[in-house]
Image (tube, rainbow, N blue to C red):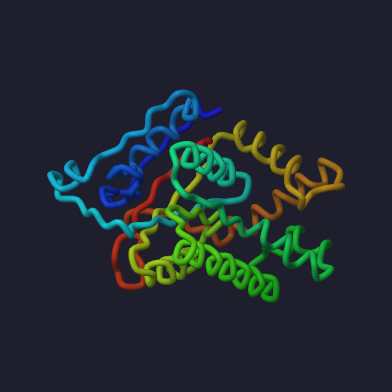
Length: 260
């Protein structure tokens, strides 16, 4: 349920974050995330559109090539993938060409094919001290980003969701640099934060139950391993704030979703 969901935006304006739709209409992302805060998001909601005339009167851009990458940020079991799937459902329902790019799913597909089933899902694989694993994780994230940018550039994509932890400023700067090098592509970060212990315990149990990383493991052993993974990420976690900048010193746009 989303009944306890809180959310906040960065001070940077989201006015230019929009996707053109048929009929000279624009979907504004501030409207989308306003609806995400309500539990009935997919039940009879009427999305807000603005016409070319509205955009011109407001002084906004009407670039038909505008595309968006939504980058998820947050520790494991904080609801990032849940947010991603709700967004995909909503955007598909209103006719936006969108696609989810999940780094964890790609990791399992690629590395387990190399006979590394016992390592890639265990907590040690996610430790910053494990240099070989850290290098593999960066390579995997880069490969998924390549796929995402190809889809936006040559396959007519409008909105791409990059689902990974992305918990360090260094990783986020790399993503910004890569994405902003593509003409007409914008970036919005969505950070999922959990401060409610009841919500967190429910999220941990749900992830253990559903994730292929813990398939066949006893429940309590899987929870311990997942908590150890979370601890590795907490050691290097840098939350987003209004002071965060890209490599050129420009501010970033973000939304924080709290206690999903």
